[in-house]
Each structure stands twice: as C-alpha cells, then as structure tokens.
Length: 241
Image (tube, rainbow, N blue to C red; front, side):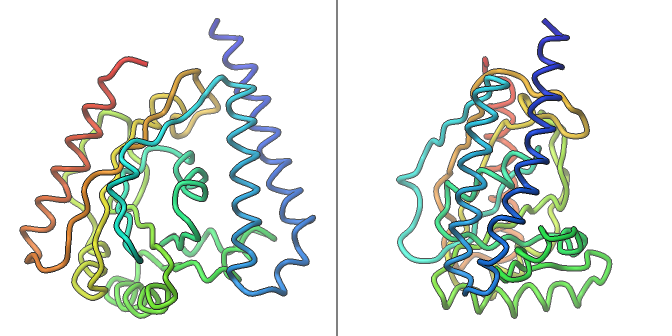
C-alpha cells in the first residue's frame, strides 16, 4: 500500500508541476488585463489541481463554517501546514490577496502572475519595513473589497504541532484595517504533509471559525486568535480520517 501511495503521489507531483507551467504559458496573455480578470486564471488553476488531487491520490476536502464569513471585506488568518491551503483558498475565498514571501515572486512566469495580481509580497527579514508594507498595501485591497489571507505562523508547521507565537503582521492588519479577522483551522498536513512527495487519501477539513471583530487590544486579540486556531487545528489533527 505504501508503494501505491508513493507512486500516486509522484504522479500527482509531476502533473502538478506540468499544470502550473501550462497555466503560466497558456494564460500569459491575461497578464495585460487588470487583477480581477486574472483571478479566473487562479480559480481555474485551483479547480483543476483539486480534481487531480482527488482522482490520483484520493484526497478530498470539505469546508465547514461558511456561514461564519462576514459581509464585505475581511482578513483570513489561517493555520499553515501544507501547500494545499495556498491552492484551495482560491476556491474558498472570492478574489483573495495573499500575504506571501518575496521569494515566490521571483519564480519564472509564476511570479509574474503574483505581481500582476498585486499580492502582498514581503521580505521577512526587513522587520518594521515589512509591517509598513503589509499595512499600506492591505489598505488598497480592503478598499477594493478583496479578502486578505495571512498565515500568522509565518511558515508551514507539522500537523499536531502548536506554534508558540504568531508573527506581528496579523496584529498590524487587525489594528489598522478595521475589518473582521476570520480564523481558519485545518488538518491538511495529515494528507498533504510538508517536505515530502507523499499524499494520502482522505478528506481534509477546513474549518472557518467565528470572526473576531475590530476593537480588542493587542494582547487580548492575539490570545483569542491563537487559542481558536491552534485549539481547533489540534482537534482536527486527532480526528479520524
């Protein structure tokens, strides 16, 4: 069974890379259009990737708590365990803007799409300058009714592992954007682990938790956000496949 999963995982990974390349080349002309038109390129990329993942690896997903999403723009603060959520959020959240590391914008062709869609790319080593950039660019997207996605941990973590402290970017967004923060718990690392080719059959759960409205002080907000994301993600990690 292990070798069957391995063969399927390798096949998916190869097709995933080929598909990314095809999307970048075929939809390259869309780079001349404005950001909202480019969204459909990302949506098609995500849709086909999820089909490949289900057909080849037997990995599906479900979203719980869609009724918790506020009206109007909001900021998504998500647990980060896998590449999976960087792809699937294109389908879960309409016209998302990701806060991502600057290195991703340097990937040939793919990086051009990220830049043209005005993703918020930051140099994580620049400290205060990175926070200022997040705030200034987030204001533009909020005014244009786009949802912002940030991973407060700053990097991917193993499933079942609790991150002790979140990065300050999520606090900066909360204090300056005056829109709700929507916490997201998930267990993607059980089925699409980080730093390995393996993909496992089963159903990934994405749980949308009740939004945290503006007005809380920094410490209170961070405590609540951490408890919700980490607590619910631990429950999902321990749940049956």
